[in-house]
Length: 312
Image (tube, helix red, strand yellow):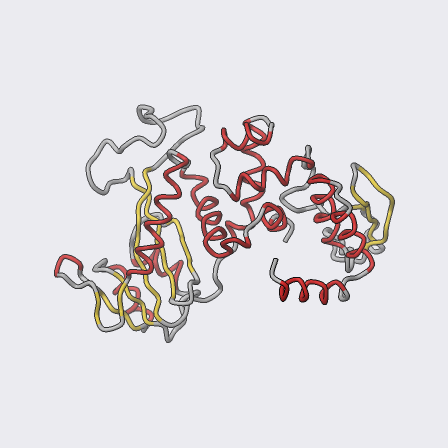
């Protein structure tokens, strides 16, 4: 850590509450990953314990299962820092930080389970608990020059016991060439500040694009896309500026307008997804959220920030 960063950290210590200092002391005491995870969880109520049932004020009410328990002064229900979060009733919390690192490293379920020392079904459960909040975290607004494009993922029914088609190998190929109902469209929109929205579409139509973009795309934004007619129809219907670049006509740029940023993001997304050898379509939004978090936070996405995201 750089000296300036350490000095800022020391200054911030003085702003901690008593319970936050206690949690920090547990981490510095070297209690291992289990202690760090517990300290991170307990820090959620370091300032004030808010009842997840009625939003009332909680008072300390002993300990249970290794976590401080609280009782609401209003509704009288008891709770802890995990109640009504994706991590509620989670077992083996001592291994959660190690699993968070597996998420940071982008490991497949089998590799994550083997590294952490948990069952494959537990690895699956934990993955989707940790991805519940990132899947919901999307930019509130896309502004300025906003690039848009669509990419496709092969439909996957991985994990289903009954199929309406012949099973194929993981990460296999479609039975038909080109685009078909076997391909699931994902719209990728990204502004020049890096704010990115990735959304699974039922189909690439004006209606589906409008449903996703109308509330998030700023009215004065310039939407830049390829020649897909649905984008132009959306822009015309909502009175937004639209620039279409027709690649088949050799149109790669128009002045400062291009879709190179969104194409670069899409390429990285496809490369990252390839390691999972076919993601079940029903879980595709969660994986898109996972990738957005990785791309958005970069080195700041750590094992502990992965766990903390599920406590938001």
